[in-house]
Each structure stands twice: as structure tokens, then as C-alpha cells.
Length: 228
Length: 123
Image 1 (cartoon, rainbow over the protein chains, first blue to last red):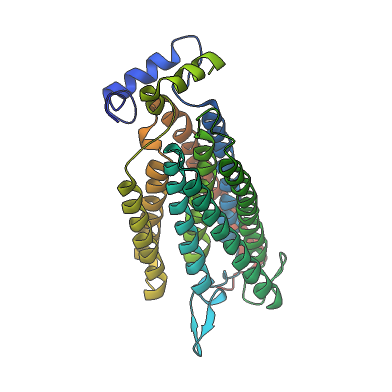
Image 2 (cartoon, rainbow over the protein chains, first blue to last red; image 1 turned 90 degrees about the vertical axis):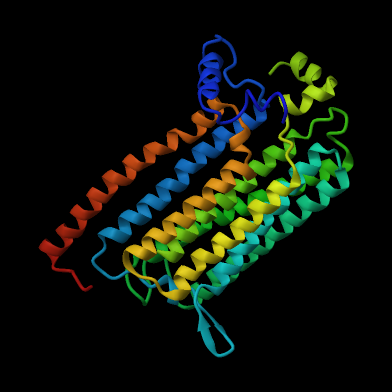
């Protein structure tokens, strides 16, 4: 962070200069970045558009329906000590995902320090937290299906509620599940010393980007679907 | 990046971090981690306290963008990347504002069509 701090990041006019010079060299544009990282970012950008399409169609359905939208605060409440606590499970899931993002950030850091064992255990913790998130989501789906929510209707109001809910949370849950498999694969390779030969732990950061993205999407789902 | 340059980068250890990885003090992550917890608690409180109308809308969106910003900037290391990568990734999603805009217009139209021609309004 000494000399390269001058050339990297958002630093006003210098950033603009590197922007122009990077694009005008008639060769690779993304300089001093691992190609895998650029590819992951571009994949995440496309994924952003997929999730945005879901969230935008949810917005369209919700604002065009003439039947009241079910109150998420009541639908997603859990009975605790004899009283309903609104959004309890969702809050727990949110905190679990943030915790897993933190452990992942630490794993990336220890990867670059070449601390294989710590990197492995932090990635393992991340994957386990992710798996528990999927487990809670399965519980939530079961509960709602038992209460009669279907993609084509429910007892509380607008029938589009079920379609939005299953599509959005299902696609996100799929991302978490794939992320768990992805993280475990990389974690085992790290432990086995697969990346020792090249001394390049960029793969951990790339896997981390995917994981943080999953957390990022949840931030938007939590705000738009559960809190709105 | 060619095989040659990536090898050269690995060999010179002092350049390696500047060329490849993102190495930052652990404290940064712990601070952001704590901040994300606080912001999540705040947005949960919005529901708990039962704020309604503009206040609810404003607080939810504010906390959401703050959380998203911290995750992208620090956890995903975006603030330390080169300007070109930052722009290549963060500018295209702005198009979504256009999509949201036209879909708001469309849903208004659908809503009033339903109300006027089918008399379906119940709320």
C-alpha cells in the first residue's frame, strides 16, 4: 500500500488518467489485475442484471396489483415465548450471512499471508454458515408451503406474492448452495497446498468475490422483499 | 495476463502484492464487519418500530445502500482497484434505473387499467 496507492483506487484526476491510458494502449485493458478476477467481476455484473430483473418484475407486480400485498412482517413472523416476533428468522439469516462475509474476508487476507490452515478453517466456517443459511431457508419454505402459499396464490392477498417469493429467494438460495460447494472445493485445495507451487492465492479472493456478492444480493432482497 | 508476466510478478515478492493480491490490515475488515451488523440491526429496527410511509422508505433504502456500498468497497476491495475496472463494473448497473423507471410507468398503467375496466380495486 505504499507506491501502488498512487496508481490504484479512486483518487481523483490520477484515476481518470489511468482510466484513459489503460484503454488507449491497444492491448489488454484491465492492467495489474488477475484475469480470473476480471472474469468473476464480469460474471457478477451479469448476475446483477439477472437478480435486478427478478426484483424489478416483483416491483412491477406489486405496484400494479389491485389486491393488497401480504404484510411480510406478519407472514414471516415466528412464535417465540407465546408471542409472534416479526421477521425473526429473516433477521437471523441476515446476521448469519454477514458473519459469513466477515469470515470470508479474513480467509482472503490469510490466504495472501500464505497461512493455509487458517485460510482453510475460515473458508470452512464460511461454507458452514452458508449451509445453515440454506437450511433455514428450507425451513421457511416448508412453513410457508404448509400455510398454503403457492406460486399462484395465498390466503393473505395478492397471488403474485408466492411467485415473487419462491423465484427470488429460490434463485438466491441456489446461489448460496453453489457458493458452499465452490468454497469447499477451494478450501480443500488450499489445505492440500495446491496453490503453494505458484504462491498465488488469488483464487481465494475470487471465490470471496462470489461469496460477498451473494451477501450483497441478500441486502437488496432483505430491504425490498421483507422490509418494504 | 501472459504466463511470462505472471511468473515474473510471483518471483519479485515485493511487487507481488501490488501486482496481484489485495493485502490490507485486518482492522479494516473488523470495523466494516461491525458496521454491517449495526446497519442490519438498524434496518431490522425500522420494521420492529413499525415506521410507516416516507420515513420507512427512506431509512430502508439508506441502510441498504450503505451496506451494499461497504460490502462492495471494502469486502470486495473495489475501492483499491484500478479506475477502469471500477467503472466497467459499477457504471452498467446504472442502466437499471431506466428499467425501473419504465416499469414504474408500465405498472401504473396496468393498475389503472385494472381499476377502470375491471373494477377490481379492493384496497
